[in-house]
Image (cartoon, rainbow, N blue to C red; front, side):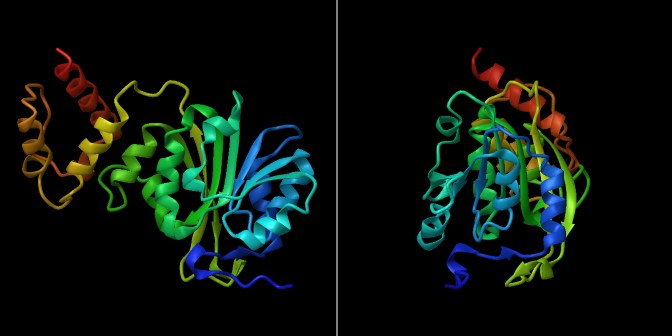
Length: 255
């Protein structure tokens, strides 16, 4: 029986054999590696992955699709909303490789959820809306550079590895897609992630204004006596500077 894509789950199923092969080549799965696929759908990517791996864990929210996937003897099916999955627990002391065609309507929450489990992850390869990946890998002083850029570049080395046109899907989405590779940094800056998240959120809350109107006022409220140039816009500040500021803020709060 043909599965009808469900709009509420943001379902767009990958159907281009050439693109599927290119994604698998980018991932380079090897037998025995612990891998988790988010949103396997009709198993277009799942099948070539499991053929190389021998076994694959998949996370699927759609009940009908989860039922079909359970018929595959080489799959472990976690029927759940991915935002409720504890990836650290799933890793069971190992390092997971995580892949998937993420639902575009909740891709950013998924990325932030995985950020909480980054210590249990070896790498991530995701199909996403191209404009989201452009923001993830953006450099300072560009229109794409923002909160997502800073929060993810702090913890990951990232690379846009493949362009995927709408006609590669059934039904075709109204946007271009791409595949990103995310490798956790081996020695990330040791900072309070919640503090960094709040600070970056404040900085980019009015991105057209100078930081003295947003982050500057926020720092003054916290009696921050350190040095930081607030005569710039948020998009002009490199990731490293935001990290240094978060570290200095944390140090001053504990004095």
